[in-house]
Image 1: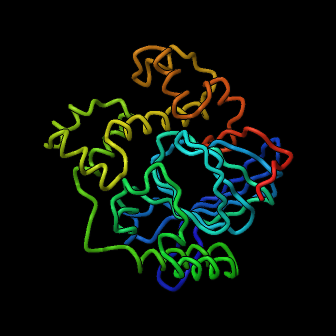
Image 2 (image 1 turned 180 degrees about the horizontal axis):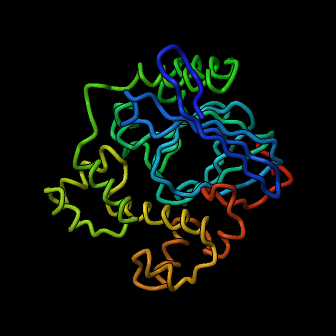
Length: 302
């Protein structure tokens, strides 16, 4: 379906509703304008009157620029480190090597832009390695400008107006003079196309670059090494598959996704998601990008 947003662009949206044991989660995804399509994968807004909950946010290949419209969120664990950092405004989640453990209270409502890694690099104008495995507050990145944007988003009449406000802000901030390296973009495309199974040596040969050069450019414009990014691609592909076909045998999954054996599959899944596949299937939240760990009462985040 399409909604007219402004005078020159009609934005295509997808609306989803997920029912879970702890409540209903509503999600609307919207396409970016054509001039930002190489930097922004989509905009999205999600909301639900959830009880206090703790969840693991699992590694994905997009960078999330998020603004909080309702709720309190505490990152309890990140990349294996215990934290306890509270987020009330906005934040940017760079690419992660492992799950994040987050506690949410007082409901949940976000508006966000899901950025392609090289799009985030053009937006932040700094190496993506500086934000990978981190969740910096937007105020720390943009100062008072972030506070003004958060206020305008909160006061907008509807989510379509919020998508427009967010897009206008990104358009003003993004560096249109620099583009993502073609080798990095092509390598990412091939990794995703092969579900992360393509060997880095073969990939370098295909795109005509050295492993050292590709690694340097990936750290700059993506934030992870090519090998780690490929592993995240594979785990993300596996989670997408499990969401559609949860009953596959583990041995078949290992073979289909290029693992040496079932033990290799189990080790990788445990490392990235902090759970076995069986535990993941029991706890996966709607959409499969997180697992619900606890819900129903707050631990207290004051």
